[in-house]
Image 1 (cartoon, one colour):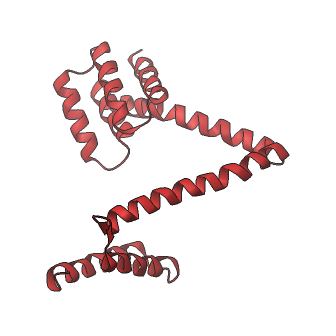
Image 2 (image 1 turned 180 degrees about the vertical axis):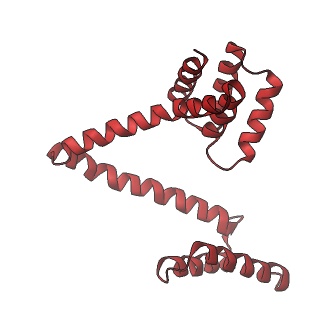
Image 3 (image 1 turned 120 degrees about the horizontal axis):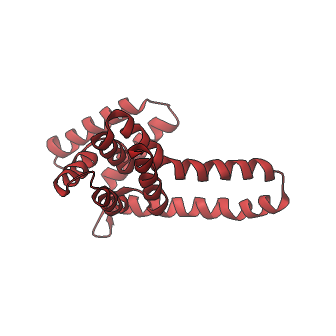
Length: 180
């Protein structure tokens, strides 16, 4: 019975939050309402989930489920928190497969694709201005370094690990040795 309650609680959390920190109040409310965890346990759970690699919701579900009902509880909680996203993605895939040859869907996608690309480019430009600029001025050294690493990754197919090592080495040299 506790496994079913745990699953239902995390399905509610998955459906009513948008991931990340928006899940924390819901998790705290569900865990507290059922008496599964104390406030101190919840605080520790969130701290551990934040430090652990991976999505916060999955980490919280894993730790809360394990704390509440052992290993199986962790699996059930993770299945619960992921089931809304999985279900919606599955429904979207089924509808896309069914209507992929539809002229209406093709018309909708002909608008959605460029808008999505524009949104992504907007975020890239915003992040680039933040990362490669200071006080409205563009840092030429950082920009050239970014372009070099992009060139190495995209056109020369250098591995991500090597790109990170090159970036760290060049960053160290430029910052500590050249004082740029």
